[in-house]
Length: 274
Picture (cartoon, rainbow, N blue to C red):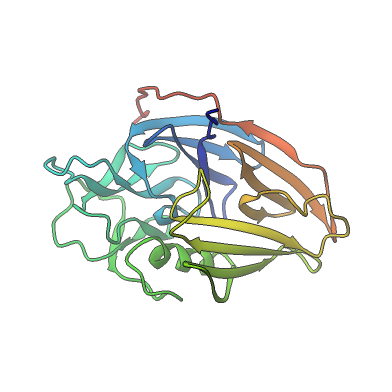
């Protein structure tokens, strides 16, 4: 009996803005960008592409106006060299700045402010297109883990956004990096970033698991949290292709509310409004 695997979801966000980007992948390497307004819980469709976006190497600007992402489509003889870093308007894919890469080593970046971004890695070639809207820095960031793949850019992003790195452990052939973040005085979020050679069905070689410590009941004890984080007095996470939120106060957390179901979307060729 075949089992339908739900689309994989990632939430690209930061504490300064109520805008968050939902990256949806599947089936295959079809990727969709969605905007999520965390004040109103409105979700809007951005754009789709036939290719892979690396969510752990993506970022959103402090005011939520722009996105930087790293993508691979495998067209190695094209002008983008089969992989590239792009800066776009939120929540779209159409590039304002476009940096051909040619491999999957480094790539992506982080915004240092609304008009400046850090380009992950050393780019020997000139950009294919540059809007003139941004200042650009290049190089490799200081990180708890020296890596040219996802941890090299994602771990500095986590530290920037108030997560604390607490160490690494081994389970079989897998390596697990541990982070914590205080939601308030009672609740602490625990993030485990897995570097896996035998990941569960529906997960990639890099995936995360989470726990909430300090709860006064066990309602959330066994939930499979993905993308768990906090925005003001609200927890949010994804599971099985759906987006959830829950309010918290002290050690109490309200019942989960499903904000949006991303399961039934299909690729659609859409134009960006710019």
